[in-house]
Amino acid sequence: MATGINRNLASYGDTEFSQYMRRAFLASAGYDREDCARPVVGIVNTSSDYNTCHREMPQMVEAVKRGVLEAGGLPMVFPTISLHEINTYPTTMLYRNLAAMDTEEMIRAQPMDAVVLLGGCDKTVPAQVMAAISANIPAICEVAGPMITGYWRGQRLGACTDCRRYWARYRAGELNKREIQEVEESLCFTGGTCMVMGTASTMACVVEALGLMLPGGATAPHASGQRLKHCVATGRRAVEMIREELRPSDIVTPEAITNAITVLMALSGSTNAIVHLLAIARRAGISLTLDDFDTVARRVPVLVDCKPAGAGYTEDLHHAGGVPVLLKALESLLNLDTVGVSGLPLGNLLADVESPGDWQTTIRTLDAPLSGPGALAVLRGSLAPDGAVIKAAAASSALCRHCGPAVVFDSPEDVALRIDDPTLGITPDHVLVLRNAGPVAAGMPEAGALPIPKYLAARGVRDMVRVSDCRMSGTAYGTVVLHCSPEAAVGGPLGLVRDGDMIALDVEQRRIDLLVDAAELARRRAAFTPPALPQRGWRRLYAQHVQQAHLGCDMDFL
Ligand code: FES
Image (cartoon, rainbow, N blue to C red; front, side):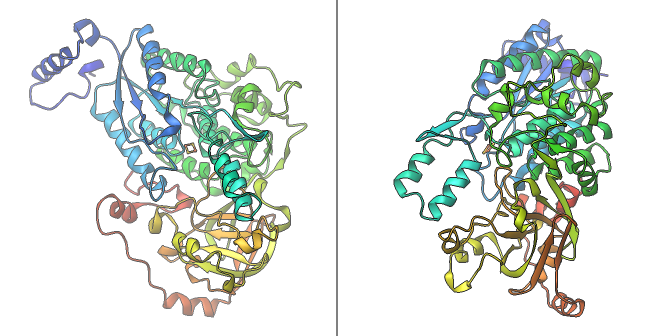
């Protein structure tokens, strides 16, 4: 089989001519025959002026290149789509699969023996992992790492749990315009990814636990020498992995996926990780279901004290030892035979790692956890026959068993238009329902944590039961039922709810139910008309082929 720059030749019907042409064009960039004889490591660069989370990535790329060269490889940097959560309309989730396809196809199309995937912001990492699994050449992840925290008037701040907390206080009239502007200028203190246990930090930790990143890589801050040293080590290791023929198919096993879910629960991580892990597992041919998450959640307590479920930040987790120390704390619950990109069984790696030290409080132990099992819970019931999820650790315990009348919003735009309208007469007991925001209808935006109506916020109401077919940011909090499947747009029961219908939530019993009798629901179903699909381009292809949330929202042809 061809290797190095002779892999994936342009097709001219003459192999030697293709090789000669390739060397000729590489010579124009200064590569000689000695360079061309080296193993090639592709480096995926997701730098973009739009992606502030990847601000220092050009430096990271240089560090990875140094590592590759030191180990005798030829580094070749190439760009792919870069997705930034805040700078992408209507939601990056609409483009995760496009990024995965872009990355996979460029790995398949260009000459490389291994690939280093530089990602960070929420959807970039799962997209890259999905791509790497499908392309199945030696692959290793490196993430941007978290921002360093900022301060406002003596208060420590981090994106984006504090973004939401202060915005809620501003809506409630507790902060004035000048104060919220000062907060805005302090929230994102450096480049890097959101520095609470949102989706970016969660996925970074989950991917390290899965074995696709060298130890310690998930949490080193973006603008740190530790991050750059990790990049160099990653570059070196990529070359070694070529010689060892260590591929994603050797690493992403059912046991490794279970370890990753164990870490997700111990982190009280983002609900988005459930969707991404389902897609990742399915790419690897592993039949993972929502119920598997609930099974693990029931036996794993929360060990990490990070916002939004706790008080700390991702840099605190790093200073406490990061994922290696967390894995040590979870050792008795893990499969220790899994082998990741280091090439060593997890048990061997953990032999040299110390248990959580008593000089820190961010990583707890199984004997003294931050809170009990069940950080994330999978719900089923007449409102979500194929499942829904809730981050129970970030919900109000008083609302985890609740029955109240529905107030229905037909789209995120409808929420923005009407949520503060006092004529709706919303009370704290109401259940706020958002539909037509699922994968097919809207690309599944992070609109599930609907704002508390201003007039209730001003009275001190901070949480209400909210139910939707979309997602919420991993940095958000509240009693928020998400990912109701099937979504309203494909005929899910959420599309049949009317204002005033009673909805019952019982997290302990894992139920979410619409209390309307079957005959009435059948009448409503007969009158249901699905919304029109987008007419052209990627959005049409996406709407036609995206799978539901309980299957991971991958395209049905991938
Ligand atoms: Fe990029 Fe939060 S916006 S990680």
